[in-house]
Structure formats: C-alpha cells, structure tokens
Length: 114
Image (tube, rainbow, N blue to C red; front, side, top):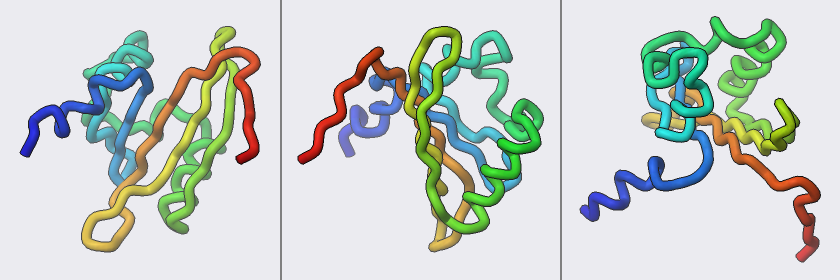
C-alpha cells in the first residue's frame, strides 16, 4: 500500500478529530493538534472530549452517535469562519464514534448552485 495514502490526514489544511462512543479522543491530525494546542494539543489524545464541551454540545454529539446522523454547520470564532462537519464512523456495521472535520473558510465564501 502507498504510505502517502496513510499519511494524507497530516497533509490537509483542516482539523480532523476522532473519538469513540464514550467520547475518548482516539486521533487528532497535526492541524487538529495545533488548533487545540492551548488546551493540550496532542496530549488530548486519550482524554474525553465531553469534558471540554457544553452540556448542549455533548447532548448533540451523543444524539448523532445514537442515530447515525451527521451534523454540519458554520461558526465564527475569534474572527475565523469555519465549516464544521461531524459524522459517525463505523466498525463492523455499528457506530464506533464520531469524526469531526473543522475547515477554515474565507470571508464571503462563494456558494454555487450546480
């Protein structure tokens, strides 16, 4: 197998964070580690992401994992616009946790209808 294929998550310019169904952070690509550096960065792997989210956010994440649905929205934080996509990941046909993609978007990002 091409080793570049396995290293692609660290070559992209967006954050990828993966947790299991209990909320334990299993993986953070380099961008994710940098985004969350002030909260521990790479040291967050093995910690529970529910501990650093509001009750409302924890409820949403748990609901997504229970139903297998995805959640996509945009935010502005500290003057940076982001698109957030949260989606369950599966193992043996069962929800095994959640993947979050956090992508910085430019101001006035175009929207096209195709």
